[in-house]
Image 1 (cartoon, rainbow, N blue to C red):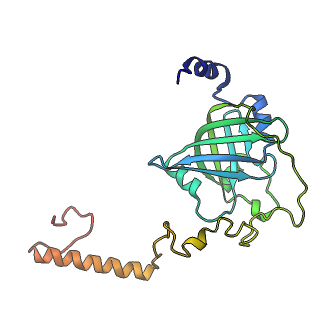
Image 2: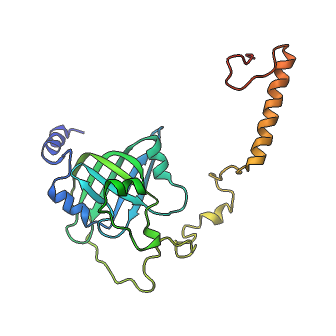
Length: 236
């Protein structure tokens, strides 16, 4: 694209391998961020995280951590992180400074009790829907500015009613079927999960598979089937 010189100048002047004091102050007052992850095949997911100011914790100049709250049960981000630790975090201040901050790094999943043993100053949130199920700890590889020129300037408005529905399972309060996806293929969407077999059903299927394997081994005149991974198991 003919931008090598501009890109080199940006990397030289703006990209750090840590969070400087102004970046740390910026992170500490954010109420939301966008999180990019990918699985082991590179298939991507981008999601939104929100909480009280400071829910994205600055542990030190090279480490961030945030709590994973109770959600829809899919755990797409956590599943991706288990397979591929690389993450991208984008914070955008729409309200005051109209500026953004990118943080790229490597993440790991940490149990709540382990995180609190390592960082005793972490407060316990009194709101049940903001209790940490686990934490994601991010080692910072890159931190750099997102420029202001296309960021809209927004304003907060008072929230009427009962406030944010943290942790709710109420279908309507979570947004319901806003995009009418269920109406297009009720219960039979393209990503319908396979039926979940209970333990008894799984055992019955496994016993049938074992019987078939033993029968094939017997038909071939070989010794009795001795296990899926045994070196003595006949081939064929």
